[in-house]
Image 1 (cartoon, rainbow over the protein chains, first blue to last red):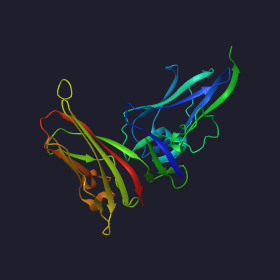
Image 2: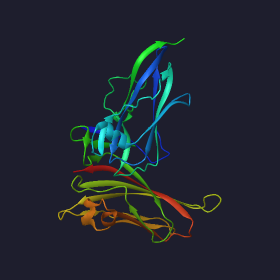
Image 3: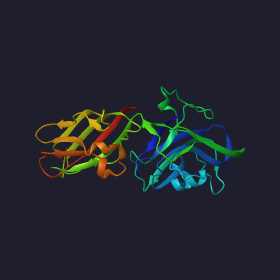
Image 4: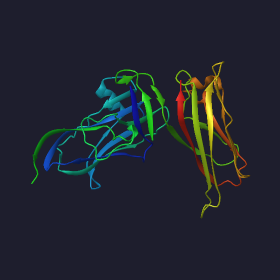
Length: 152
Length: 149
């Protein structure tokens, strides 16, 4: 299969994905599940952050070793819907959010890099724009919502 | 910037899948005459690729304190290819600007490029010279535009 990968450049570069909770409810988040690509398991720490209005509401670090452990593999090349699970209860209300992937101690090169996959089709989310080609599709991203409550 | 990765089967792999599409790397150019810059971020594997079309964009500016006084920018197209004796070859890749800059690309030990995990044996080198003064810095952007097997 052919994967279209938006690769994360070296430390200081970020990849971002906007998403919106439209319903006026409180969403209890079970996991954020981005679609990542790992090429030769680069060193460094990656940080997945959720922001609302520029303010961080969630952040969690992971490494390629964590992904390999989760996949129970010794292989250094993988594409994976990787669940990032909040350690504490996380409630997100309606509004516009940004999911951000950043890094520290990471160096991208032609032989070793980390990226976020752009799926050919997104069967889960609704897009608010019309992509002119597959490369303009949104980054692969799902959210596992445990429960919704009334937002008052 | 996107890469296209051909994953043969499954979700994991022990070996690198073939990559195509646009791959862009940035390399910092050292100061002045005779510096040899290994392009270590791009490994040409002849078991996966037979032809690589690369657009190389060289940009350099004079960085003495104060405003930039000189600027050089040039783009060239270079083709890397595997010929009958199974070595990598490349078309001429010379930058020739004004008197300030002359530079070129070369392959060291082309028969080893496909095994170039060790950059000492199969690297692509960038060489520059004829630069006036010691206070220059710049970037070399190499964009692989197409790759065929």
